[in-house]
Image 1 (cartoon, rainbow, N blue to C red):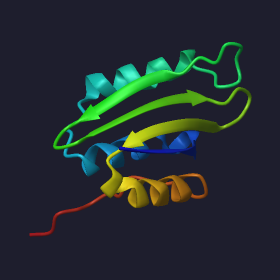
Image 2: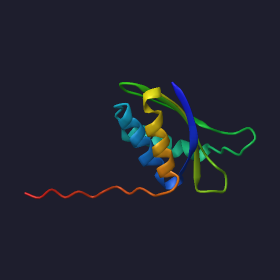
Image 3: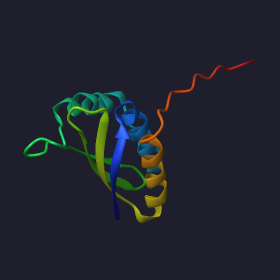
Image 4: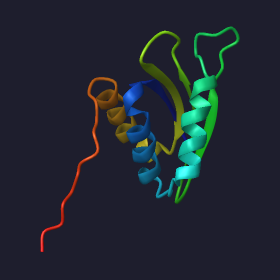
Length: 111
């Protein structure tokens, strides 16, 4: 396992976690997403002591991480422990999601 940390824009938390889950073939259900979304309300990486939320995505491999809002900003801090083979991908995801907003694509099926 390798450690990596950084931040993502608050609007990218869902895509970030969805992408991490897909990297380890973990199926995140809506109940788990509600737990994360509402749990983030009680986090603050700048509080004394800091208030982080711990999560584990365990599918074919596991990603352990903690996540917390940075008080007064639109930034969400993350610290992850990921399989060494995924470290470059996770770092790229962090780099992208700290600079650009992702949106969900609307797909239409043509017959």
